[in-house]
Length: 198
Image (cartoon, rainbow, N blue to C red; front, side, top):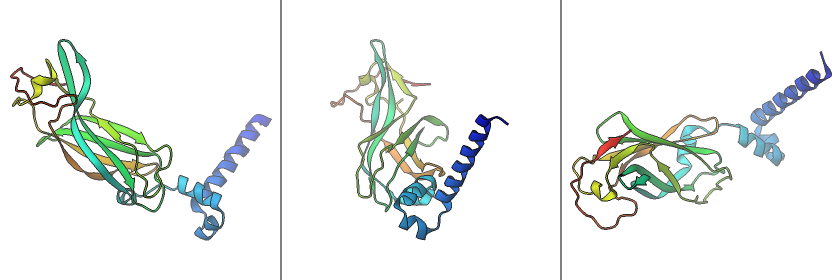
């Protein structure tokens, strides 16, 4: 066996031993050695229930935002945005949100969005910047104003999930998507037809 392979195997074994120590170190040891405590927190997966209880959503907003706008057509997609307060006892890091958008009363998804957040830890009691989850599919029409008061524009909901490194998904809840349109303040009625865009 070459020296290179021997060195590689030694490094792998050292990493395996360190990972074992970081994850399975007894509490009395990690508390006495702050570095071990931080590493153990990084490697140990957060339970979905614990993660959900650590998250409080603030300033929730839902609306329809632009996917793209062209002179002859506009595509709008449902959006949910919010801020997160860490109400738990531990920092939150590498937290991912998954939003699944559906027409109300239907099981098939209209679209979804998966977003990873908090590369920098969100400390207890700290509030995050605004997080925006935008569906990849929505509605197509001739213009933004074509959507307003149009009966073909179906009511839409979003199911929101959260996970952290190594954990399963925890269900946060279901939210109605309002019929506010990004960039439009005045309600105008327009009977131009709209159709789902996939």
